[in-house]
Image (cartoon, rainbow, N blue to C red; front, side):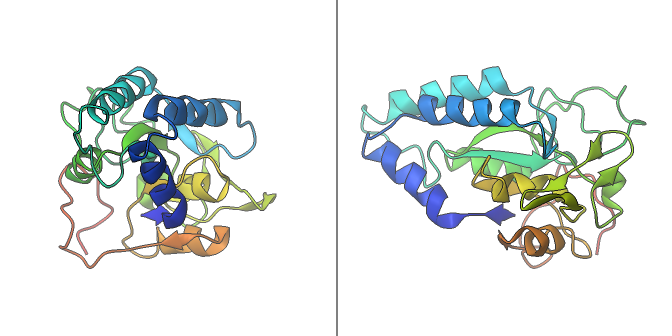
Amino acid sequence: MNIELDKAVSIATALLERHTTALAVTEATLELITADNQLNCFTHITTRDTALQEAARIDAEIPAGDNPGLLAGVPFAVKNLFDIVGITSVAGSKINIENPPATQDATAVTKLKQAGAILVGALNMDEYAYGFVTENSHYGGTHNPHDVNRVAGGSSGGSAAVAGGLLTLTLGSDTNGSIRVPAALCGVFGFKPTYGRLSCGGVALLSFR
């Protein structure tokens, strides 16, 4: 996971105090993502309609007195090896592109949604998570937000979206540095939980350890 915690908390707090709306935050985030023509962080931004629907649901819950979660209205994206319902999980490869779409979200994606976070897309990565630079021959390279002539690191390189100001929270995977390397190269906080602490259900793993 790569995160700018203070910004994520600020978004959720602003929503709960009704200084803004989840719909406004989500629309602004989607505009930033679609306008970006330098970083190449995303392979899929096909969750737009569902993201806006989820934002509208959260906006309806707050005035009704319901608490949508600690991450209410915080947009997030996930490495394209986490299953996203309705999207084919390609894991950075073209071999999988004809596979059927996922029928349910990966467990980690589900948990973030239950906390009120809003999924906006899937992130670029090294093919099958086997690499450290996110120079993907199928989907192009992800560039470092601080210097687009430099690599963002890998294999969770699409999480450069955090350092690029497109998002405050992304979900990656890390077998041998795949979260920690991009975090270090892009200058953001990257967290790798102890193996077994977080379910790997619905994730295309490089290996099990």
